[in-house]
Length: 315
Image 1 (cartoon, rainbow, N blue to C red):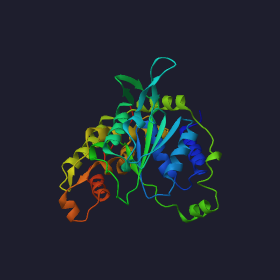
Image 2: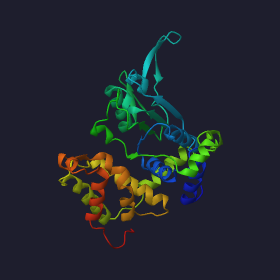
Image 3: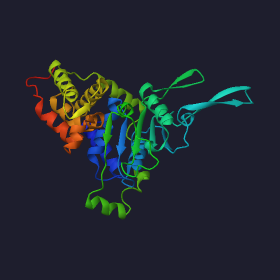
Image 4: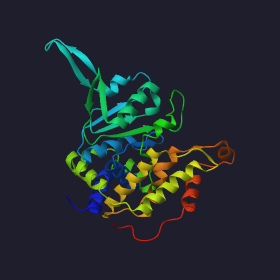
């Protein structure tokens, strides 16, 4: 396999054939894949969320399924169901949309809370249970979910406990001027057939194993813990980051270090992932809302208030 930074550049180049100008988003999602997490893309329609997810499935050579979440989608559509087969005179399992490596859950906020809960349970357990039989999902298993932040008619907002299941929450935003020109010229979103495979599931699982072995110094653990606990003690936050959120931040930091060709985590790995990992996990207090504060503004203050540890972070 090529060097890690070179591999990142190749992945960005291939996905850039379909969705141009989103290098930082691509890097974050690939980092989350290696960290073993799921991604929530919140943005307006038509900016390439679905195209990005499909491009990832192609470049990583993963089995892929897409489900458009609507009010009539049932939990069985997600996890699967048993159907009687006359030929074998027995019930057989029909897998749902979640039985794959990469699942795109389109407009997750437009389905029922019961179906949302079924998907989010699968995301956590990475297993499906039908008629008392539990089946492991393929490894890796990644969910890229999308939701539209505007037009809330007919939507079911994800509760905080379910948002917590997503390692990252990202917003793609509108393309830059030149990138948008390329879209209109047909050089961007209609080029999925040009995206080449670079990895497969075995490569990703090996890389995930290497990520788990990245060294974390005690000073880094203390630094992360201070950041997480600061969100629980802040007057502008009514619900701070859970231990699950702290673990997500640590896993993202380790994957970031790995992709930067380091075998150890440095404070910058924590800092550079705080926004995408933490802002969707906090709930603002009424005081913050009355003061016109946003989650990003509060997390920025916390980042500057916690002292960065100094010294060697190597083993």
